[in-house]
Length: 421
Ligand code: LLP
Image (tube, rainbow, N blue to C red; front, side, top):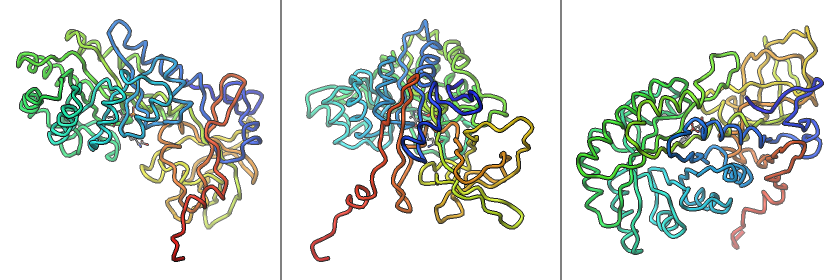
């Protein structure tokens, strides 16, 4: 459930008409709902009630400072994957002890940054990383808390570009080698083993692959404990999918996921961490765009809008579906007609939808892309010299620009001219 609903025939974000925001900030723009962000965080938090746990929001999904602050104030920890994300989390007021550091390529500088500023744990992904982490911690005279990310070799049954738990993926160490690698970690001076980490992929719409992976983690927990390691924390990753197409069967709810986690892992007495990104931010955001032209082509018509692939790359990159709805609710009985919805960028891939049934629209009308709060703004670029679009946060009947659209001068003047020119 989100807080983007039609009221009196027009789309609202909480208590603010979308058209009012469009008039104030211009199109295209992203708009996020505070109430939806809070609600989705709470759903996960409540799903793990009764077990010691921390929900570490995977901030790669949407790392705007205002979004992070909203979630941090609700009690969220953060899952970061770069020094930049670590700095953003700290700047939003998240204490080091609520930050977990994931990612296959942590540099010495990033490791030192987190060890200085405070960290809950590093999720280590390889032996060379383990050696560097130990060395940096040792030089600093501290001990780095770690989990090791294991690759359970299960098929997450999601888009190949966002599956991470098969043996051919670059993530984690093969679960079959876990005992050996944990023994190596235990022998390194700068590390303290605190648990196990696993993340099998994103946009999972079925609990079965999770359960398969978590059963393997449960077994590994017992084996590693028998080997003498202190396994007191399990980081179970993120990846629970969202309903991008309302017409499809909906993916499992956080409460279903939480019940499964307790059933499969509850007997181990471990503290549980989860790293949801998409399910918290995805349906808490829209991208709003204006129709520039309606063009008749051969055998098909095109809705040319002012948002493009550089603003929302998911359809071009993953053939992802986003529901696209008119901001003015169509009158009852209006027949939708199939149309291609495209942006102005000079690539055929700048296509959001093909032959999508839409009510008749005209130049100047607004459309909203649903489920655009996660992996939307964070993946945007300035391709075709299109300035990054603004982000707006709604809270009840208030709204605020939380990242302004740069001016053309700001965009151009970021380049510098060498003296010989
Ligand atoms: N934890 C780790 C270690 C991850 O790699 C990810 C996502 C998450 C948590 C959060 O997964 P989520 O709950 O958001 O599914 N750009 C792609 C998604 C890439 C996901 C990368 N890792 C998209 O737009 O679909």
